[in-house]
Length: 219
Image (tube, rainbow, N blue to C red; front, side):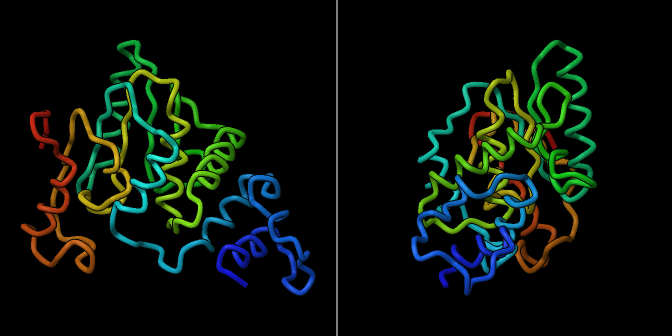
């Protein structure tokens, strides 16, 4: 079995011995009906939970033609990212903006990760986002977080401002595929040294990778 086929069988709880001869009939866009099935499928797609780098994510983003026409605020840092996103969301919503917010991880439901106008995205919207990414990626391997980030960006379209929380680090995080109009760095401490380096300086350098020349950065 290919990794793609094995992931699909696991998600659908199908025995490989009973698989049909025509594998094209098992494309997720037609067989994965529920959010739970999609999430199970995503967990099987990539051999690594974390795979740093933006090349693959950029390729799929371009295939999806994702080019936000609204301001984007990207929030990074060791601690306080979630609280910062919540405060920004509350302030912008109170000012009358239709806010889209993408954070991770979730506490109870995956839907918590994507909020539009103060409400969690429903299963149908999330599944539609996953389907769009699956069709666009071709044979490009994506991790669970990368796939979810691209699906969230697809879902956050009918909004006036987006708030995106970095998952790990910053420079090579999937969220950084979008150029921030304003970047926020909450704090820098020793974390994820296997990926970001063992010193505060190296970690800070990775987190500062969400900054863009000529655009505001709040530290």
